[in-house]
Every structure is written in C-alpha cells, then in structure tokens.
Amino acid sequence: EHPYHQHVYPFQLTTGYGGYNQIGDWHDVIMGDGTIRYSPTEFTGKLMIHCHRLIHEDLGMMALEKVGEEGGTCTCTAAPGLGLGAIIGIAAGATILVAVAVFCIVRRKRRARAAVEAAENNDLELEAEK
Image (cartoon, rainbow, N blue to C red; front, side, top):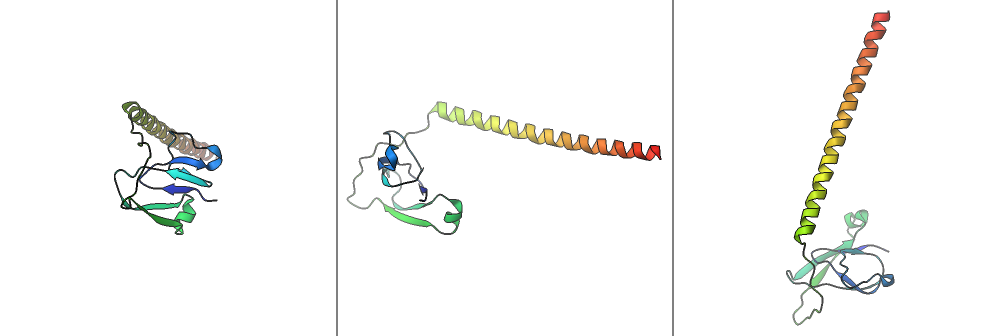
C-alpha cells in the first residue's frame, strides 16, 4: 500500500479505510482503499496527487487528476478555516519551538567552550609538571 496525498484540497473519507471516516474529519494523506470527497471551490484543472513516501515521490510516483469538469456536481461540506484561536496556538507553538532550539544551541556552544578550556588547563598542568 502507498499513502495517497493530494495537493490543494483536504478531503473527507466517505467509505472504506477500516471505518476511519468520521464526518468532519479532514485529511490530506490516507492509506487503504475507499472513497474520498472534497470540494474544489477555488481552483479547477490539474490537481497533483502522489505517493507520500518521499522516495517514491522522488522517483516519479505521481499523477494528475482533472478537477472541475463541466457539468460536474459536488455535495461536499466546506473545508474548515483556521480561527483566531488556532492561529494564536500555531504562533505560540512556533515561538516555543524557536526558544527551545536557541536554548539547545547556546547550551551546546557553552559545553563545547568549557570542554576546550578544560583541555587547555589540563595541557598547562601537564607542562608545569615536566
């Protein structure tokens, strides 16, 4: 099996996938067999789909799906938008992630500097003993 991934539109699972198809759950990657639905509200034309295993994607396991053929219909529910709370949560999470990364980098540099100083002190002590 290959993890299916499509760009532009998140999708809902309508049948299959071992019952993992609750109304309101949106996905952009799924594995297994079943039927999906999505609402092409902004762009029509070619939609890229591919295996979400990067080595397979890099080797060309991709396809194009034509979206929005004339006379087609869609009964999908609208994709959820990001509310203010979600945006604030994402911003706070990103800030914490950056702070942790900076802390780790500074800590690593301090430890490396301390190790160099300790090595230099040991060399000086050895020379003094000679």
